[in-house]
Length: 337
Image 1 (cartoon, rainbow, N blue to C red):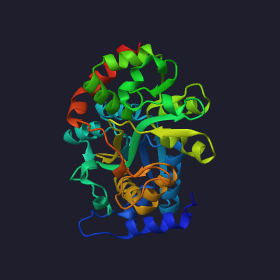
Image 2 (cartoon, rainbow, N blue to C red):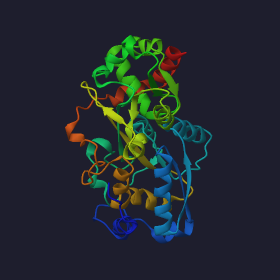
Image 3 (cartoon, one colour):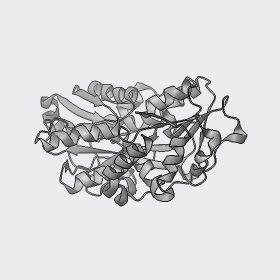
Image 4 (cartoon, helix red, strand yellow):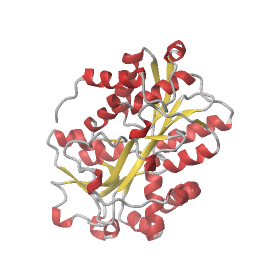
């Protein structure tokens, strides 16, 4: 994979902050610089999040105060602060589109259209700019090639119920990872909670995050990552680790990571500057180099990974997920006890 020159990042982003189409909302950079910092809550992989923060600070001189955790944890912290009438965060980035929709209905965000808002598909953004996908997460199954022969690999999500996979699987917990709320709710609705009861009987290991899932796979403690993001093993694969991603024939999950400018935030101008920056080519072209998919239609996916157009994608009813999220988390915890 070729290395992307830092000047390319900064040049691409400079254009975004300097100007844009007439419909894009202006960013008052002088006011943003007077504010001097932006507080960002996010579930972006930590190394990638830090690179984005460093790029923004280097380009604008505005410091990024970063709080990074799992998506569900991010949302829980944000909601607790909001319930207490306190707003400490400027920009919120997570991976639960249903939650973004629910919070938009409550008026918790500032409608904001970045200069490159039109480069993101309508399906993964609010038309008024209350939230817009920062990146796209492809969630499937990945396996250790050296520990699971090709003939024994699952082809469908329901194959994981087979006893031959007992003690081989690891999965992130939806109480921590918001991506897993979408996947858990969709699979439970399609196959019933007996599906997850079968996975529990198969001794599936539960960990908090996608990072911990990848650690289990890399160490060989488990051989198959379920409903997981292969971006977390991208670097290992590049260095020669034998890991393959399996895209189930009944559909992989492609889930947006919405990002929003928070209403009433302490640094409103810096928040808009940062939101604008994240949709610029500089940041969006960083994502494929981090084995992530950009939200923009004009930025190709990671090298060696399939284009999204080639995948069968599992349909998700986000209205259902929005209405049932608390029950999904609760029922999952009960089943997995």
